Image (cartoon, rainbow, N blue to C red; front, side):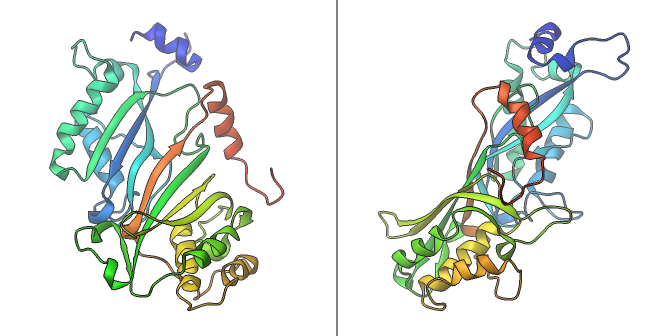
Length: 305
């Protein structure tokens, strides 16, 4: 792909007599990872993280530091089946991805990244790389994120072969109670009772799906979907529902917690190893990509539709 084609896809890349910096080309990466061996997504000095591993691999290939932006930062021990990130390259860096071979630059990048990430023994796997649509932002352009959570309730369902991605809960859980509590959280709310707030960030979110079901092996699988999730939000909601599902708390307790909108010692986090980021969705119409990114940056309010 030549420069004129890039400029057609993104008018910001068009040449200018006043331009003094190299034109930037935004790339998307879709990857998955087993979070068991990492201290979450975000960079932390002296600790292994997914972002650290990925950016080190990109730096080795591009020969300069590359900073990535992720759709959703996952906690320590949490996994992702389909995570999305973006990063920017100069036009020259983009053109050199295939090293002169007759290969799509994105395909070439995936091959090279997989080679470098081989040292992670399959714990981090890049699925695809491609040129981003105009205005794309991995975090702010996203429409929603979907998570899954696995629970083995009762020793009879414990399996050491799946323990790395399944929570073991000693008591049996009432599926009907779990779903009743989950339904009480649907909609647009201030989820402060189930979040670890970040400075200058809102805890208002829109939860559109939260269900529990048993799979063929009898394992309970929770499915959650929202426009975005706060820090610890999924694990806190799962933990609260479990407290009602095993009889530790009375029915309706989760709704009471939501109404209180206060973070306190009653906030219980479910085991991170059973949580998987399954999917991140973006607008199908490329014209909506930039609009979505701009709209999402607006601070959420409870009466916003």
